[in-house]
Length: 93
Image (cartoon, rainbow, N blue to C red):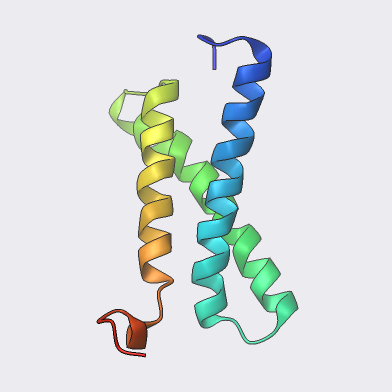
């Protein structure tokens, strides 16, 4: 992040990365069978988000730190929502 001191930029990037990993892990857990498959799927989704956060804003000409952040947040929210157990989505246990 060019607008922050280097320490805050690092904290910002690590926070976004951890958030993506948590949401991707939640989605991967829903579809994966064992721990190794879950870890591989989580990392794959993490890399997809990194790629999309640069490619999507870049394709429309809006590539800046804020558009990349918005893309990461939207994709993470989608992963978090899709990772929810369908039986618990309506409040039933």
